Image (cartoon, rainbow, N blue to C red):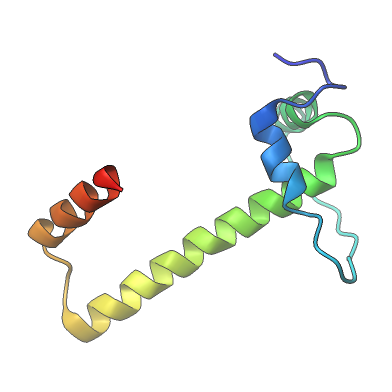
Length: 94
């Protein structure tokens, strides 16, 4: 596991996502101690909030994607397995 003062390169990607200008709001969260320790170990000292902001942005993007699929299926019916397989092939080939 990386030293808590040196974030891994992948974790740095999450930290960098919080560098948007504009007002910030301070929030308190409660999580298991082991989870907080693992995040600290991976992203480095003082980067916990930036990591959590990036994780929240990622989770919201996943939720919005699910909403788009739900809306499509409400209007057009379920996405066929054939269409899903075609999309998977195109994704792999991209």
